[in-house]
Amino acid sequence: MSDTTQTPRSGFARHIPLLVILSVALVGFFTLGDYLTFETLRDNREALLNWRDTHYWAMVAVFVSVYIVIVAFSLPGAAVASMTGGFLFGLLAGTAFNVVAATIGASAIFLAARWGLGASLSAKLEASEGTVKKLKEGLRENEISVLFLLRLVPVVPFFVANLVPALVGVKFRNFLLTTALGIIPGGIVYTWIGVGLGEVFDRGETPDVSLLWEPFVIGPILGLCLLAALPIAIKSIRGKKDA
Image 1 (tube, one colour):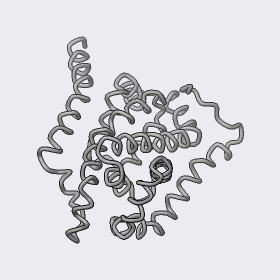
Image 2 (cartoon, one colour; image 1 turned 90 degrees about the vertical axis):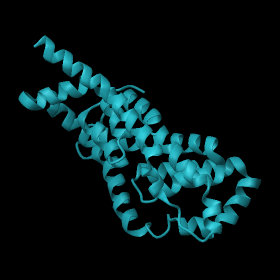
Image 3 (cartoon, helix red, strand yellow; image 1 turned 180 degrees about the horizontal axis):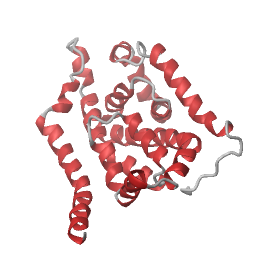
C-alpha cells in the first residue's frame, strides 16, 4: 500500500471514517463494558470450546474478526480478547491470531485518522518552522525507533499508539512493521495468561493481570525499549559531537 494515500475531495467526507470510529468507540465504552469481560468468557467457556473443537477455522475467523473490531473501534475488552486467544488456541496459535488481528485493527484506525485529521495536520507540520520543524525532523529521522517505543512502553495506551503516528504523518509501511513486531512481546504475555484461564476459572478466581508487572516479564520488555531507544541516543550523541 502506498504511503501517499489519496484523500476525498470533500473536506467533510474525509473525516467520516474517523468520526464513525470515534462514535462507535464512545457508544461501546458505555454499553459493552459489562459484556466483554472474564465473567462472560467463564460463563460461555464450554460452548466456545465445543464450537472450537467442531468448527476450528470458523472459530478462528469469528475470533479474529471480533478482535479486529475491538481494536479498530477502540472498544473495551482488548485484554480479555488477547487472553481468550490463548484460552481457545494455545500459546503459539493464539499469539499469532492475536497479533494479526491487532495489527489489522490498528492499521484500520491509523488509515481512518490519516485520511481525516492526519491529512490536514501533516500538511501544517510540513509548513511549520522553529521548534515544531525540529520536532518533525527529529521524528522523521528516528521514525522506526519512536514507533517501536510507542508499542513497547507499557504505559502508552494502544489507541494512542494508533492515532498519534497517523496525525503526525509517519509512513504507513513503518507503522505496519513496528506494530506487527512491537506488539509481539506483550501479545505473548497476554496469550500466556490466557492459556491458564481454564484452571483459574475452575478455582473460582479472577485472572491475575498483575503478572504483567513482575520483574521477569517487565524486565525483558524494558530491555527492548532501551534497545529501540539506542539509535536515537547514538544519533543525538553524534549530533552533539558534530555541532
